[in-house]
Length: 111
Image 1 (cartoon, one colour):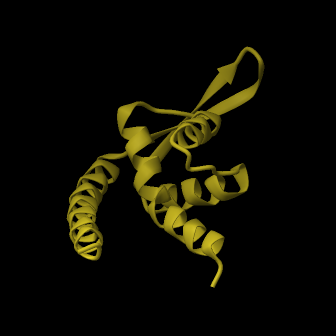
Image 2 (tube, rainbow, N blue to C red):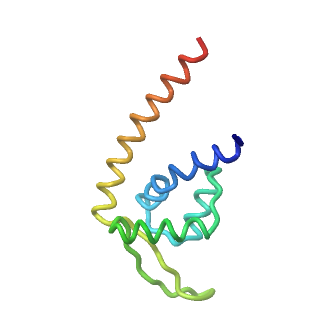
């Protein structure tokens, strides 16, 4: 088993949660989302992000609007829907429980 594959799977598993968390703070266009993920050391390429945004939009967790740009084509700004906010709230609780459980297990293994 390769360590890099396991690391990649762990990152992929939390990307939707992270994207929704970014958009909870403010609406953003994909380049801004990628930048926020990169700043957090969750490196993501556009080819990974766009299908996730589409899936979240199709699930009615996100909506978007177009805005004209002075430096190029119009930009698509994404934001959370009411259902997206409720979904994020559930994920936040699940993450807290999971984080607590993993920390309990990993801290106990060193004894």
